[in-house]
Image (cartoon, rainbow over all chains, first blue to last red):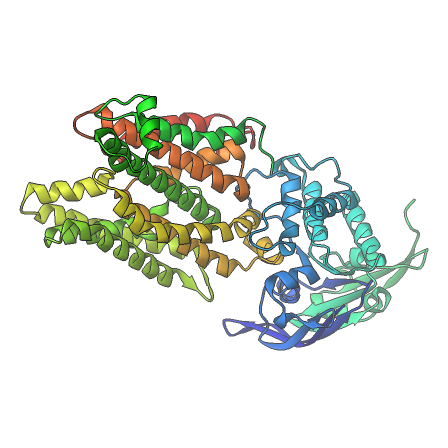
Length: 266
Length: 334
């Protein structure tokens, strides 16, 4: 459960986030959409406690995030981010086991059985069991993304935040990962995921939070958001809407307005 | 953390083996029996006792301490800054200590006071570099490197000026012997003076193990899994400054070990700090003890500065090992 009350964040006099009020329930999958630079990543990092907010408050499972220590916060919320340069030659199991950091005091160097179980479970969940001894540098982009998600899962947090987990992935990999995230939400996690593709978000999320210039325009169901006028405002481009034969709505940028009927593929 | 069945015992046995070899070597040839009998009679008398307990054993301990301390510093700073070219003297400790010692020698300060002057100056420089590198509540890695390199250059110029201005070649020779690093003439007293600082540095080093491990996947992700990165940076900086300054007090400026040993240790045990830091301590201590032993005999009765020996032997060895394909990365490098 995440609750944001009037959250604001400025950097160098520039407002990155302002007046954000929102909540994400337990078991809910919320997608965050918006044009490049509107504050999606900043919002996720603020929820994860990596960017201190200047105003308002963020509550994680009822606890004020500002009152939590680093380790306590990491037991509530895990943030999965995109690729970052790593200098060391790490194996997949080593990477995922770092997710157990908040469960150890500084003098507890050894892995416990519950750590090993958590790492195994996380790798199995993303269908990477058997990859534990593989060098991370030898993995494909999709496999790496799964490892980063496994790292977040190994933290065993009730809240999972993901920053563009489908970027650089092919259609199949993106489908697998988003389906998996939706299953995680159904299993009881609160999942918040910044995405670029409006239709991907509509296909998998329970609700979509739409950001524009650091402000939250709306948090609505995919159907309401895609059929309403806010997408045009957020992306500053006309949108064409297509209603598939199974009733789902899809949008395409660039043409504008007209709604047409279409058959689903296959 | 996986170490092969042979590597872990080899690393455990390496320092005692190097210590034993170092105790046997010197101007006076001693048999293993002589050394053992002297070691097991700490309150004994005679020449043999004096050689082992007052000359060689403190020197072996100092070499082990310096080697381990510098290797740990290098590993911690390279891990924290995620830069394989960083060495323990990055924080300006060595250059400031050298400058202060050079000025103290020129000013005619008593010889026993010079290590303490170097220690204080070294820690002062580390604080200054940290202040310059500070960003918010943490440390900016690039600013730390720039501040360290800049101040080191300034202090090196002061050393050069001191050598040029030295009226007597004795002064210049004393300054140069500090710059090249040596354990000659050091004993239990110096070790006792440095021990509390080394102990504090090791304790901070142990605290840094888990954060350093997490930092391997990047600073942002380390923060996300609960690492207080700002605090970890300050602790690593404090630990490395204490250890580097202590090693300067004990042996002057011993180069090479802090830069190279972490790379060698990574080749042996990988980058997991739980294995890497103990491996660095073991390899650094063993390397320094063996190098000191060789320095004592290679041009006897004179002594070769340890920094010179380490550079001549260690650098080609390191390049050979480093440029070979790594079993961990599948390519050259660590």
